[in-house]
Length: 410
Image 1 (spheres, rainbow, N blue to C red):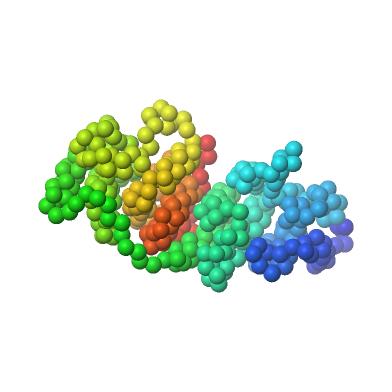
Image 2 (cartoon, rainbow, N blue to C red):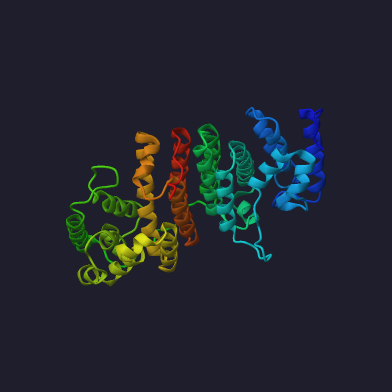
């Protein structure tokens, strides 16, 4: 129990013994490592960066309410109101009032809101918790490879989204230095993942022919796309938009693709962004091209699209791409790859201002790119997935240097 005569050392020891007793039968996920090593490491991370007092005690105790039979009232009585408040802010509500398990994503959004609405100390505590967990994942990747993700209820992409969301809250709270540390760890995780299961595989070359016939088809599609995109430029720049579909087609050709997928690459945005229908594409360029463009296109009218949440639309698109087969997956990979390359170059030149060009911020864009990488790997192309993941890792690394802004608040 706290009193005026307690020293930092005695408070630390009391909290450590209490936590060790409560976590005594628990292990770190997928290992034989005692769980108590985690809160100890979280407290140490904070002490190394100059924190002291209640936050260190709360670090040792931060999981006892969430994972053990301990209440916040008990913590308040024994360790003080400040400690109990911090632990409460970083503890997840795993079940609703009826006792039903809450979805992982809902729990995480709720926790982000609590931390964001709490004190700077709560933000720092959540940062240290996330940093140690990220460090543990990176070490696991180094030791056992991609199998480390089997330890978690959700996979790599969702975990990366979570850590970058914590980064957003930390940077918003004025601690870009701490956010940068976590972002660098996340970048290392992405790079580590891209290095596993990699290897060259034969390209998928769909029907559509080659030679002079293909050259004429390419020229026709290029001219058509250039005319449709004539008045458009790339976001936040004076670069003609047509450079994007040309680059997408080139990425695919460089990796051995040919035929309909190249024509579809040149045309992949004309339905979504111009006054062109899939029927018109089918009549002029063939049903195979129109089908591919349809799979990668958000086909809702603008008034409907603007009312639907961005992430809901993207989840629908992911499902469509996954169901569209390996050729559609490759086309979406090339689209995402060029966009990621452009974002990285712009980040190198303009820093965090690059994110003001987009409807959503850095964290959501990273989630989108990694979700595509997941589909690409599931489709049997870990080589292509690894390329995209390397690019995404570099984007996160750049963000750690420049101070990438958090998600737009609506």
